[in-house]
Image (cartoon, rainbow, N blue to C red; front, side, top):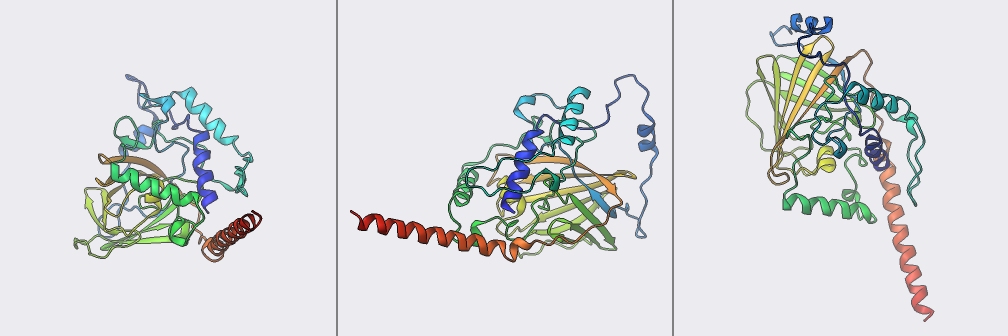
Length: 338
């Protein structure tokens, strides 16, 4: 799964000239029919009176998390830039040449990042800081990132040296927070009185979030300890007490001290706006926020069979030990020939 993950990052870089969908009406123009519909739309309610957020939501997009350097100072793309990015994404199903010594990964057929930028044509999913970039790492964050990079470059001593995705513990896009990635960019929400369930298709992980006013627990968990509340029609999920690593921490570098606030707000029949704010003073110099529109899907969720956790990790570790033995034997032979 490591190769899948790295491939997904490089593929996003290919389309890094990107962002959104329908043009925003220019000043003075009459609002479109869809805009009028949005202003008159009323969210359906569950029996307990809260907005009904239930269903399967698709968060695929080719809009990058961070604004590309080539678009510095440009928050919104032109129609031409949107068209070029989406055309490139649609035609991008090509085989990649593996790195030297890399057995390769899936070809483009198997990836499902989507072919559209987000609706408001933003050049990044990050909305704060305004420059659309993740804030600088603190010295502690830099040290931690260097240690992870070093572990990835050497033979794995144990499974802890590999990602939680490779170990089939958490999905690489499930977070929390959830971020678009290579495939399985689907989440299903369920609501009951006092509970909301957030079920990710990637590694079929479910977070059961109490929405009854109870305080946070003290036990650290892979997905953190989540508590929900309603602020008007917005579901707010507050999460602390993360255990060690999450898929998000391995991609972005967060620590177990991360405080995550997620917001879910349904703005029309087919759109759920998902926003998250990350606050981790041991990793970044300031909090930062991303906003991702999710689209209602009629597709079913399927269980993700993460076989790497069954036999892939064994192969990685056995291969590492075999390489070590081969290197040791070669060193003895060289020493004996002197």
